[in-house]
Length: 116
Length: 109
Image (tube, rainbow over all chains, first blue to last red; front, top):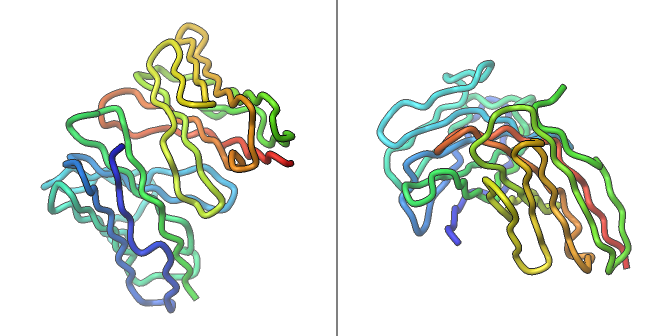
């Protein structure tokens, strides 16, 4: 099946620093990528949807200046958590959807962010 | 009331048992997904259904569109099946999914 690579898998950073998370589709062109956040023992919550070459659409309550999303190519989307604070500590997961399977989302392995 | 509800929330089974996890949804959908999340967090897509039944190895997924209900069955369960199983629904193409809260399955020897 299709592969989505997410990097890094774990990151620990100091409060106030910015962290970039990459999501790559390795064997297909991802026209749409989704970024999710998951708190412990809770379900995934969609943060934003990004289409290649256009601005991301953020869900209500998600600060677009805090969580910068770039989808500059059909194989790469990045999420940057700017000026991270301890409350941003969470598990972030991306998924990608391509032309060949519009209803199918392929998930990355996730990134666990810990802000000290 | 959540738009996607799963039951049970937690499930413990002995190796070899037949397992059923249920998912009910209240919104119109185009597709329903069953996902598996292991303790490390990574998510694997198990099935995407829009009607009927699908089988892959020991896993079987069914959906009843009229009743807005889906079930995931695991035959001859094994400890490596221990994970959180998540039901998610989507209204259409490349659209955002609405997730259930998951069913935590523990299969013991």
